[in-house]
Image (tube, rainbow, N blue to C red):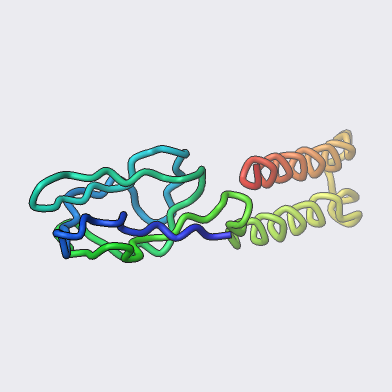
Length: 140
């Protein structure tokens, strides 16, 4: 679920304001109440903060932009709603390919005499566990 981050309601006497400074960028994870940007009117500087934890998406403003009341500036996606990068699929494919290569019976039979062939299996298991930890930490 995305939360729209809009310019706050400006006083009736103020028709527009300027984006003074932006403290975030697309893809940045922010915490509730973290300052996102400042708006300057002819009388005051307003601070806009994150209403919840999330990830900044669809940044529509830059410093110096003129904005009006209730104008959409960016969106805040909940961390759970942001899909994991495609990199995870690539990691799975690499891990599976290396796993299959490592435990291929033909490769094991080609191991030098006196070599413990179970090392190939343990190596594949370690690789899969490493990939699982990476996936877990990215999804966490």
